[in-house]
Image (cartoon, one colour):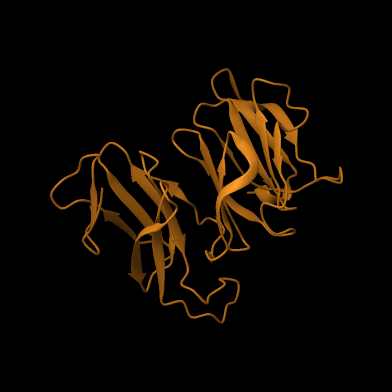
Length: 231
């Protein structure tokens, strides 16, 4: 096993014709022209674009339909310099991109306009680098796992008693709901669009399914842990 974060490149492979050899190698560069360590990456759901995050706090987007010599768009100082960007992901429509960093910042971008963020907050610390973000199947909500206020996640002396799952409304960027998990550290979330269930996993190895007690359609989801209905 080798640490992905120690490589300054992003490599793609053709999994059909030749899965053992990479097809394209993209080198990530800082604004100074020096090598930039890559910390996170993801493809758009249509496969036409992908984003790579650098250790200098920047986000770089490439269009696979164009030569990959230079990025199509660069978002400088999206996160604090010399910190890891932990996670980047596209919305289902591909119109939004969200990133979270070691600096406790979550950024939301419009993929049609990279000049400024749609929404930004600096109050979402994460203890583990695998802590992610998740869009609802209809892109109406953004799920943000986070440590409680006052914790950084960087100190071993911190006694974390619970973590929160925030539901951010994409319509007006307000907090729609918040679910608290006692004695657990929330890491990953996944919202299944077919059965309309939310799976969350914890650092202890446990997992939890959130679903509607009466319905399992795409119109609403009631969280059985706190009986909240999201329409």
